[in-house]
Amino acid sequence: MDSVRTDASPAGNAPPCWEHFEHMADIGLRGYGSSIAQAFEQIALAMTAVITAPGKVRPQRAVSIVCTATDPELLLVDWLNALIYEMASRHMLFARFAVRINEHGLEATAWGETVDRSRHRPAVEVKGATMTALAVREQPPGVWSAQCVVDV
Image (cartoon, rainbow, N blue to C red):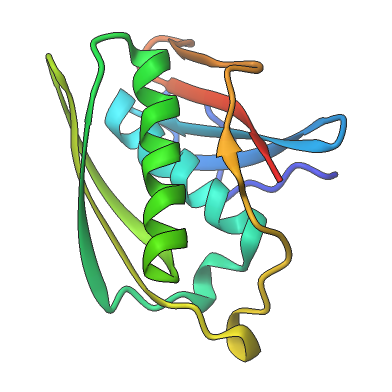
């Protein structure tokens, strides 16, 4: 699988971006941003890109999501799994995200729409976020990355 990035590579004050990375039969996701929250938004967008082109998803309906964890890595897994749950239970795809991190976890809004198989042409179903290659870190200074592998 080739890396796919939006805009520029993560360096200095680069714009937020995301990419996929190879991992045996599963898919690695990575999001970058100037904050942990922005990196979480970008990795969520990377997860949508595993399923369909994010540009095909209209931000028509907002869904609120709350996750509780004080460890950033565990919070990342909870965040992605909460999105997977919302996609499956609501039959939706999301393409816009607003994440707010606090000392107890995160509060987020995801915007999307009901799956339209003829327009979205979903490629795979994401089953869950795993602890494999799990990392949330700042490097270089001012650029946060969030990564993990999702089971497809």
